[in-house]
Every structure is written in C-alpha cells, then in structure tokens.
Amino acid sequence: MIDYKCSKCGEAMSVPSSLIGENEKCPSCGNVSIVPHPADISPEGIIKNADKPKTAIPGEGPEGIGGWLIFPAIGLVLGPIISLFNLSMSFGMLGMFTEGDMAIEYPGAQEAIVGTSVLVILMVCFDIFVAALFFRKKRSTPKAIIALLAANIIITFINVAWASSAFMTSFDIGELARSSVVAAVWIPYFLLSARVKNTFTE
Image 1 (cartoon, rainbow, N blue to C red):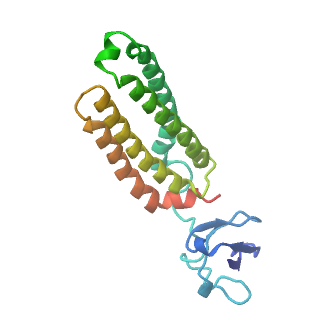
Image 2 (image 1 turned 30 degrees about the horizontal axis):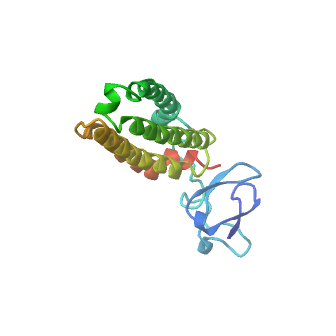
C-alpha cells in the first residue's frame, strides 16, 4: 500500500501500490492527484515537490465525457439497441429454416441462427455493463472498453464463420475488418489519452 497525504487538504490517503502513476481522488476534498512513488513521499507522508506536475496536478488538460469520448459514449448507447434490433430480425428468419425446402437445403442454418443470437445477447449484456462503468466514470473503464473491443473482434469472427458455413457462402471479411479497424483506433486512444486518464478516476 502507498500511504501519503493529499497535496491540497492534507487528508491521509492509502491506495494499492499497483496504482502508482495513476489518478486518485481525495475522499475529503475531491482533489485528483497522481499516486506518488514511495521515494517521492516524505516520512510525514507529504509528497515531495508537490508543486511539480509529475506529482501534483495530473488533472491538467481535458477531462469529462467530451471531445473524442463522445463517440464511444454514443456507441455504448446505440450498440445494444442496434444489436437487439438485428437479433429480432434473426429470430424472424428462424422459422424459415425449421421445415420445408429451406431446412433441407441449409441443415445447419437453425443452429447457426440460435448460436450467433446467444453470442449477440452475451455481447449486449457486456456492452451494458461497460456502459455503466463508462457513465459512472469508473477507473476500470479503459480496461473494460479494451476488453469489449477485443471481444467484439472474436465474436464477429465466430458469427461470420458460423454463418458462412451454415449458408455455404464466402467468408465476409468486411465485418471482421470493420471490427478490427475500430479496435485499432480506440484501444490506443484509451491507453494514451489525457482526457481518459483525467475522466475515469472514481
């Protein structure tokens, strides 16, 4: 644990050592500061050179859900809605493959529709969970977003491969490429953005 005093109000703070270099909010005055390295803390718990940016005021720069963060916010809201709409369309198609010529021509279609629908439902639940973290500005949000983006690539690959096999069509690389491009753009942003570091501190 790292024990030190808030550089603004002097409140005693204790946080896990794994948070060194991360933002931490003072429970007393709400001041956000960077968790210092033990070498930067005096025996009295005061942060040395607290007037320097590296150990004092990490909140300098943009913060809050604005700027480029607007786009993930919109995506987290619209994503589950669009997925549920597509899910309803898939269930509407299910009856076409339960009997008759379509069932004979595409014997694996029913299983593919049900299987991919289950995966979509799981992704919707995960999306809602991440959205809750995002709008509550939880510290774990960046890691959750990255996990969501990675999961989306995996689920997209499985769904496309499953549908391609069931309906005997070519593999749709477009869907997988779109998911990969989105991840390639937003994963670095959530790792490096000053706004992200200053916003998700709860």
